[in-house]
Every structure is written in structure tokens, then in C-alpha cells.
Length: 150
Image (tube, rainbow, N blue to C red; front, side, top):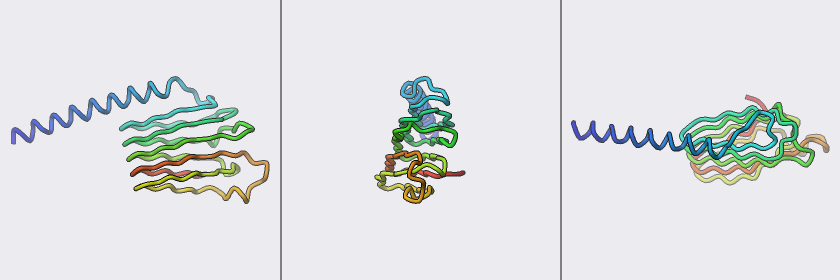
């Protein structure tokens, strides 16, 4: 019983240290950001992150979830006239990306032992001059949802 308790305490200490290191690394990677930034970086290492963007000319974004979760809401953002590129990577974690229904969303899927669900209108059915966003979605034992509503 004593060995089991000792092992449990060691596991708790190690996982607490790993979580703390993950939080520190996430904050260092992301840097300072505001809702109006036209570029964003988010990392969730054994943690959770959320971003509601109000960017006036959104160009790029990167989100990496590793044993954590990220929620990105771009429904109040405006895309750069040349469009935007968002890279989503979920490793044993999950990412939800919400976009306006009026945007043309093109998704490049690379999923292994995970899933990517796309709930957006077919880009070919939207106006020719609609804003265009390209999403690179990569999962490894994780999940990504790209949708127009909750």
C-alpha cells in the first residue's frame, strides 16, 4: 500500500510539473494578443484556450492543441481582402473553429487516428466575391470541428 501511495504522489507531482511547463510554453509561444489582432497564435498543452477575434483584416492564425482544447470564434472578424490562412493542429486534443456562414471555407485535411468535421456551406454555392479562408487541419488522435454556429 505504501508503494502505491508513493507512486501516486510521484505521478501527481510529475503531471503538475508537466502542466505548469505547458502553460509557461503556451504563453511564451502566443505572446501578447488582443481581440483585434490580424494574426494569432494559440497553444493548449494540457490546458484550454479561447479566442473571440474582432480583427479588421485577419490574415493568419495558428492553433496547436496537445492534450488540451482550443475554441476560436471568428464570426466577428473581417478577413484581409486577399483572404486568410489558418493552421489547426490537434494532437490528442480538440479544436473548434467558428466562422461566418458567408465565408468561403476551403479545408486541407490530414487526419490520422482522429477526426475532422466540417459544417460550413459549400464554397461553390456562395457569392463569387465572398471572403475566402483556407484552413489546414491536421489531427493525430485528436479532433477538429469547423462550423458556422455553436
